[in-house]
Length: 103
Image (tube, rainbow, N blue to C red):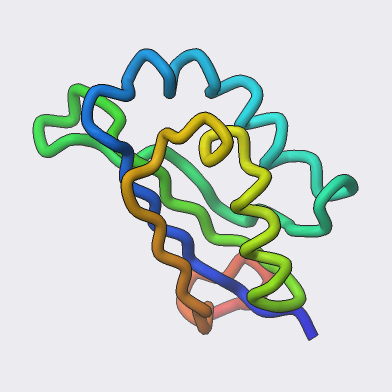
């Protein structure tokens, strides 16, 4: 049974150029569920407090289990490029705002 997972990834300092360079490849990876079997339900960049620079990534994904999530993240182009300082994965019980449910 598939579950939802929230992924919080924080960039290493000084990685803005690398983030911008890898962004198209990363976004293609996120959209290619046929390749990795993980479905990205929500995603986007987190921002610095002044909202003037990207400093991380937030994803909500659907996967069969934590092993699939870890494989997905290991092969993410941002991870491969060494962009992230820290990555936190949490199983998530999506209840409010789920597009598949009505409130």
